[in-house]
Length: 321
Figure 1 (tube, rainbow, N blue to C red):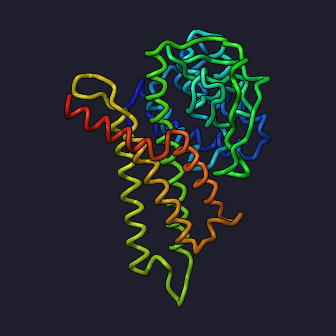
Figure 2: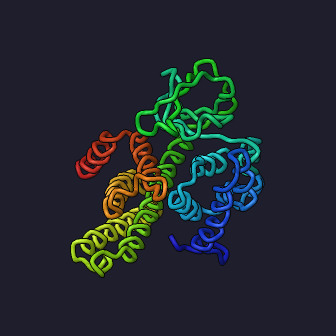
Figure 3: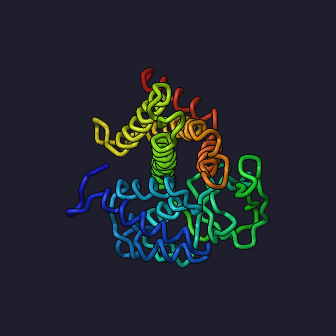
């Protein structure tokens, strides 16, 4: 993830992203798009003609990681993806400049009627939905909505009835496949960032929390857990880096394995961080539960247990083919 482009390095964007996201966290929801757009985050992969920077996807990965680490409640990955793949349209320019919000329904197709698992859909003007020939961007300003609060009562997922929503533009099958592949990478990066924040919090807490005249991190069992958390975190980073690379034949690699691994690793790391905090991760003072909720919602959006079955089936088919 450290490939350069014209002297730029993705890691440098992460530093700028953290400052912008920290600022956004203190502002009202309606001000967040403008702050992120002014910092260049929304258009990092959008074409220069659309007001973006025209950079490769690996420059968006540290931005998604920063959003996950800082628990940003904004569909940053979706905004970046849509600004990138709606190139040459007025929609891309509006998204890049933070003038309007759009998101993606990761589950359901237009013909299904109701589609869902679209992050921050309650705030979006446009919604990308799959259909048989690719995907369509819909105007969902007046679409009926219902909240699904099972995984997160405070910030529920939104389902929308899109049967009467007008189509404003379309994406062909090839572009849609590329968007979904890149979406898996950025969702993996978001989960990886959430795990990073939890791991840092756990390491800090166990190093400073003193019991019986010794910090918790002096105990061998705690060190073992921290080591395993770090190992999984590094493995998740390696999976994302591999997904960004081309394969031996110059083709884009499958990205679902990276997403699957990072969702599993992030869940383990965050839950263990809550455990090492003595359960305080479910309190307002140590709000690790927000990160766990977001990872669980991403996991549900991409199929939950069906995701691992899909990855396993593709692996088997690869060897059979």
